[in-house]
View 1: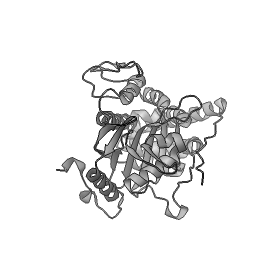
View 2: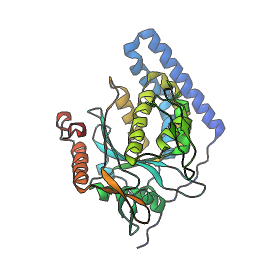
View 3: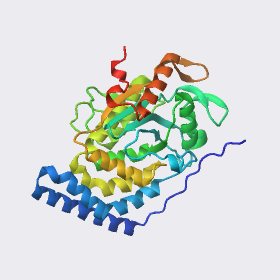
View 4: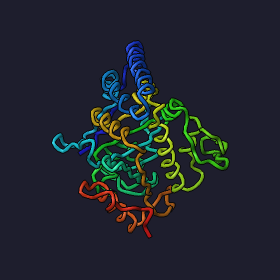
Length: 343
């Protein structure tokens, strides 16, 4: 049976309607801050969420609904996860060129445990040599997105890691720059110049020791490729942490309308808007940011017709067990496997 690639419809947005929605949301958020200031710091989050639900949630839900794209790999309605159950999301950083879908420049499996306020990020190297499920070939794993979109990427990662992938989310790298600028930049641990020097690579240069890095520098940081794949995936995880640090600051609640507009044009997912909003509120009401645990599939590179990354079989087994452990709702926070304690 021929594999039908996923196609994505174009969105048409009304600028006037969008401006009215943004104004309405901004007014509600401003009121939230005024009330929070008068009633004390302890009530800021509660008041902000109350006014968010009252004035802004409906408009933001409509915008998120525009980013919803089913790919034929959605949980059965009777088995959909709640905002408190562990679940997995395949995060795909994509860089489409013109009318071409392009390959996924980054692939991260995120296991979310809302009740425990914990997040596991497992990086899958883009050059991983594996079977592409649904296409009948073995090549770099990032080619799955080019061949069959998000669904083929999910099927291929599920086959490799032998665990369910409940949802996917793609972010267009071109939109990453605007998102970072919208939240006022991010802090990144850059202590020396980062620069692409090979003629075949996109020119980029990042100066070290800046207090805040803008969207252009952040995009260059996750794209830089003239060192190891391991370092590249580590930078992607560092960026995600830095981005979350800024996103969850109360001051950035006022940026919600702009962020939603940017995301609407550069973000797709098969997570329903109700689940996204429930999760956002679940994490927002915590006393601290989610505890993030990082891991990367280990292996070594080899060259035949191109450069590939061969996953170590023992490490693959460990990673499969790691993800299964974090997805188990019966496992307590104390029983979670900790890669940082691995000998």
